[in-house]
Length: 380
Image (cartoon, rainbow, N blue to C red; front, side, top):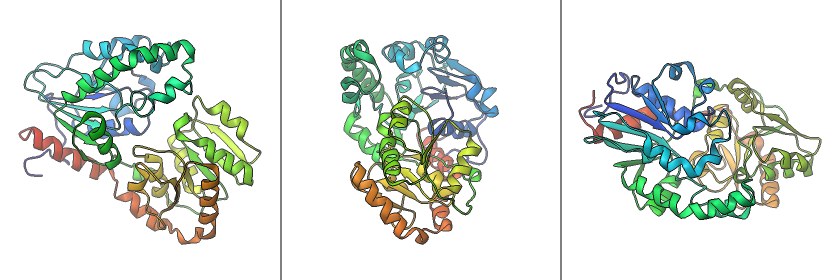
């Protein structure tokens, strides 16, 4: 790629430094970091929190700079409870002198790292932090599990945390969003423009196979994922549903479930791939910034029943790889389920798979490589 980063010959220079908000479990954002690390195989990585047991082998040997809060979380407490301390912890971290490119992967505040003189900062933004912006009112209403005292503290600190986040965003040289939906949020919240490079799908993990008679939810069980809609719809109609994932909503969801709903908790990557390939369809009732699970289902040849909003509009093709519903309500999802079942045979596994192939790791690395090459053109 002229003037850019060579995609097939990753860097071996320490002039690049990587950053990621935290690595405590291997989910979509962490897979993005792994692809960044493949582009820059000698780059050190800064993060607020690190669970080393979650690292794949290729990252376990990296030079990690972990914030001082890493001594407390995730081992001794939930890292999310330390939110008020994030700004001071980020500011205390140092990007090495001589770094020419700081490449951050962020859905929190790690983009607030101070860059040394002569360093450019490219931020791959998964989303401006939802708990500070779009979902802040949910935290203040008590749906976050913070408790009365925690909500009071959060209310007092919210203006300061927002100010830090805006200041951090202002110091970024180039924003890259993971979807057009997130690019619009970056424009609205930070008043910054952002190009779009879609995150990667690990296509090799998924193989289409004949479906079995169940629907599937794969998600962190938090309120905004709206797994309650999927559980209630299937429990009320007697449809089989498997829920893979865990989180603070798990107990409440079990109270909504009937005998046809099965909860597996957290499952391994191979188990996710098998569940995806065997389901009738993935249920995707949430408003996602991107939503990698919807593409993973398509990589396994299965369609998606999705809420019409957010990143799903960029990954699911209506009538070809999935069905949309227009409101996050139980009746709307029930209508979508009936619509899907009336034409389930029209969703071809090979069409779903081809859609997912547009979002390959190679396409992600090529797109990010081009951005980095444009801002620091002589990095080789």
